[in-house]
Length: 408
Image (cartoon, rainbow, N blue to C red; front, side, top):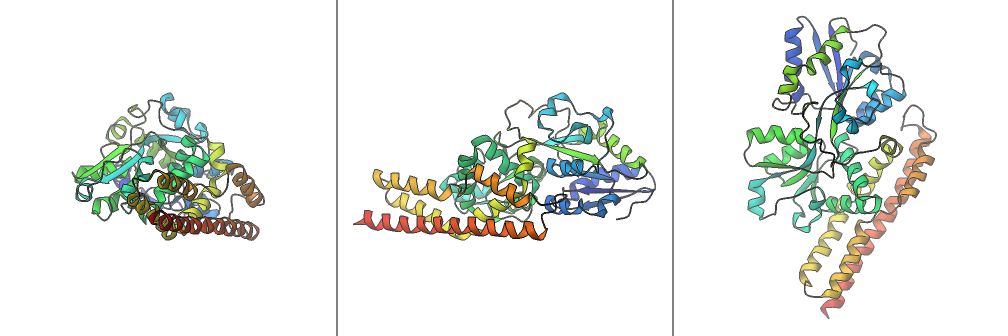
């Protein structure tokens, strides 16, 4: 990835395909330039920026404020020109230091669904991420995970911000129990829905918009419980200035590209488009995000990813018991208690933050792979996972006992 004078190297957490029209236009306007797009998921980008390869990269293009903020903390980004300053209307959602990023657009997030699939399964239209907790969606949902997708991490953080720690995790775990599959990438959610292999899932609007242009049975609804996600560009500190990166950003902010940015495959809202900037979307706090960045990733995997079959079994047992004893008020009340127990987090927020501080206090430069950190993290994961397994098994047994007693 060594950069040279006629080369522009872009590290991005976005998939390559949507960037192709922008890259091709830039190459058309700058004869002889070679553009390399290095795609990495957010977690892999974090690893890449912690080694020498970051010096061979000119620009970082991402919707992750965490990637940009880590680079800023490590003093690997230069200040951007004041002429690149984003409109004030978007500033609430720009989480990194504004002098370290250029904002070239933004996305919203919500739920995408396949109308034909919904008609075939007689499912109601989803209204929001939280609406996917409805048992009617059991086995019809897919989503990615914070460990595999930076945008999914922002969605999870949005729910925790909007509803608080306990209620937020209850919603997240309940949606998790309705999952049929876990997508390996964030764009895989919309692709699976479009293919008809699954019915619905949370996604950023960019993927849904591209599919809606081609497929008339795809629907999407924005969710104000989910934050808006600006698209950031950071200028990596170099020994010599690269004129191409300045020109590339100028192109992205040009009237021509900003006008087309929503209708081309990049599918972002222009920085000048205020359609979603009405102040109702969740606003995240960068300090809170960074304080629990790694912990949220691991907690989600322990609570949902690693426990999915057992979680599904327990939830299905509750669903079936509700149907069987729909007329029994006492049984339904007890099932409500068991449902809350099933989906409540096994650790409160203060305990969680204390554990994260103990685990990651020794790490250097954001490196989560140091032996001491790994050992502490593994012990914490084992403890939480054991507690979680015990809770799920107890809920399953309690439902069985309740059903047997009610049937007598």
